[in-house]
Length: 198
Ligand code: SF4
Ligand code: SF4
Image (cartoon, rainbow, N blue to C red):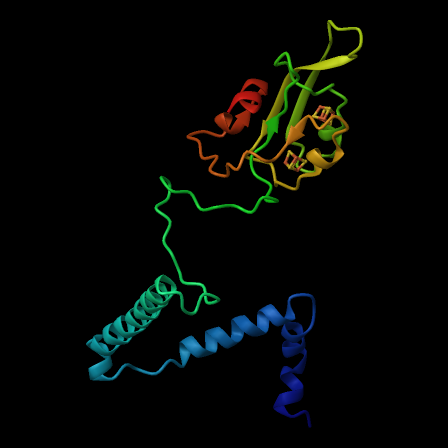
């Protein structure tokens, strides 16, 4: 006769196999923990122990940090980094020089865009967020120029492929600006003028 384990085995196998098996096991464990959570004691339900535990942890970090800053002032423990607070947005956090930030179009000496509308960046862009309209350049030495150049920063994934692929060094991601918040999706689309001057 089949025992109860054998009966539920096919049911369990559904959970423990397949691509999301580990995730399902984690979900089941969390559900079990929530269901079997013990009741709070009277003392715990006043939340006084939790408040003091939180205060203790915060104070521990505060005094540890204060101690480090004092040590740095007198030239001690220089190799241990102390935490600091940036007064953002007035004081932005320093960014790594290699970080890919908002795009800009570089200019020639006469102020026109260096871009020759070769469409390589538009082609390589995985997010399909670059849109270029090419035009004939008045200078016969330059074949084309971008009549319009738009990047939808709401779709951009900041992969940097457009910068890598550009043969003219016409597009860069070195403005150091990351806070591109706007009030509408339409204003997330940066046109040529904004990309050259903002
Ligand atoms: S950074 Fe990547 S996603 Fe953004 S515009 Fe360039 S190629 Fe497209
Ligand atoms: S930005 Fe560079 S890659 Fe893109 S169209 Fe202009 S020249 Fe070509």
